[in-house]
View (cartoon, rainbow, N blue to C red):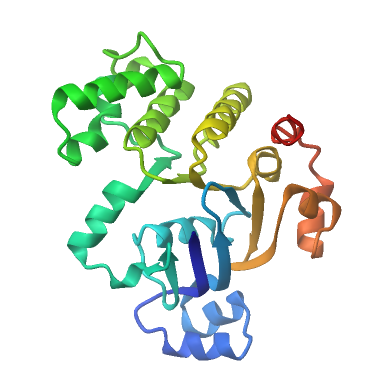
Length: 277
């Protein structure tokens, strides 16, 4: 289980005044005007279950990318704690944190983040190379995952020879090849054309039915969140506006902010098939 316990993130060198204003109930804009500090997250409390595809959505500046970077400790919380299976990540030294990232958590980026001088197979095997897996074994694993994401036959191709959707398939295969139990996805499909984006959503959905990884998926698109998510957290100005299953969000929006999103969306429900199967 992933747990965020009352997590606040304030960006800036001297945060004491901002913390005091936050405790007094000041808004994000008020804190920025008075202190110059930016509130990335505000008292976020979430629990994400093992095997859950958990969507975090909101507009630009809502705090969703800050949240995902706290989960792998690319940034540190100002207040509160982040724990995985009861272990507080703040307690990991640099060596333990490196092993945690290698063995427990993988990430898929919006920008693909592929190595341009490496082939598809070498890109997919890269995480295994960092873990010290022998070459023959890691390339065999890479080939299996390349096939799983529908790129069999492209093993020797370089990334610049691929379409955007194909490059994102490589990024997904690279994350899956490390066989970590947690997958972080930071707006992975938002740069893709609508039809390719739909294909990637369907691919992820199909893979998840088999793999049942714990996935934290960041998106600004409520339609995508409704289509893929077991549960959804909607963020506004760094705070959680609502958490719930897709039906909770669409049928019982907790705030006017959430209701405005719902009114604009008529999303297909990819997850409905698995629930009725």
